[in-house]
Every structure is written in structure tokens, then in C-alpha cells.
Amino acid sequence: MPATLQPITRIIGKAVPVPGANMDTDRIIPARFLKCVTFDELTGKMFYDERFNSDGTSKGHPIDAPQHTGASIIIGGENFGCGSSREHAPQAIKRSGVRAVVAESFAEIFFGNSSGIGLPCVCVSPADLTSINAKLTTQPETEWTLDLRTMQLTDGAIAYALHMPAEPREAFLTGRWDTVTELMNATARVEELARSLPAPAYTPLNHAR
Image (tube, rainbow, N blue to C red; front, side):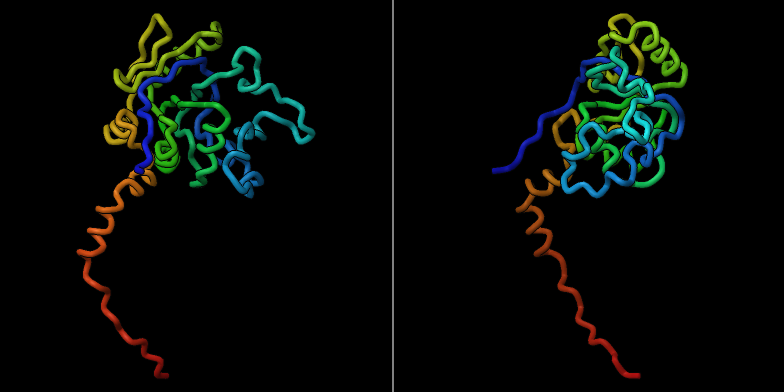
């Protein structure tokens, strides 16, 4: 029976600021956590070294502030997710309870890895990002609505325009964002394509010296 995925159209919840440009994947999930056997082990590990000292005491990162507890939307900066291509970075974010990331811009590989696991990454203008962060400072308990149908982020009073390439947006809206599931559901087409391809030519290796 074909696997099915739910469309992702709207995300509602509190937001937490993760300030600064060029937030790289090494900071999102430190390298020592990459030895995990399953991605579930990354739960709670996002931005670990940004949040905790070597002895485990808190550095007072916004993620751990009481007013941001349970936030489901991260508000980042410019070039979010740059650096190495490790897929553990978006996995750590999603498995820690975050359902979307809003930023000025994203690194291409991070954006692709996030889209493939159902973690929407949407862009806002620098001016709107400043306004959103100001609201988070004065009213951190605000409930936000991120709507991929209208491409707006709203706080109940102001609507901020969101931007995302058409193809991943369509994939979220139709529940076709997981390429592995898409491939598994297209077994007949895969087999048909395999039969249509010419057999590879055999070329004997020349071991002459």
C-alpha cells in the first residue's frame, strides 16, 4: 500500500529568535553528535554549544528562556544553515519540536535538506525581520501563524510577506515533500524506466602492461 504524507499548509505557535547572520550547521548541531545511530537521538541537541557551557550549565540562549518554551518557529538571520552539508542540522531542529524556520535567507543545501523532511524554510525581508524580532522582544508570548497558502506570517495584527520557491511550496501544500516516499510510491514507473534503458555496454578491461 503506498505511503501517504500529510500536506503542510499552516503552522501556529510561538516563535523564538536565533539571532545572527551565517548560522552554520556546525553551530546548529556540533560534530560530536553526528555519531548518533538514529536521528531521534538529536532531540534537544540543536544549537547545543550555543546554549550550554562545557559543564552543562545554561548560557541563557533564547531557546531556553521561559518565555520561549515550546516555540515551534525559529526566527533566524541571513544565510541561515550555511557551512557543511550535514543533514543532521535540520533533523536536530525538527526533532526538537520546531516546525518551521523563518529567516532573511538560507544556504541552499540546508534549505533542500529541510524541505525533504517536512521543515519549511521561508524568507522575509530584512525590514520585516527587524519588526518581527522587536515584537518577540516586547511580546514573546505572541502566537504566530505561518501560512504557506497565503505566504504570510501573522501575529494577529500585522501580516508579513513570506517567500519560498514555487516547487517546494507546492510539495508542502500537496503532501509530496518527501522524495523517498515519492520514489517508493512510483515503483511501477521506476521499473518501466529501467526496462526502457539500454543495457550498459561491456568493455573488457585491458590488463596488458
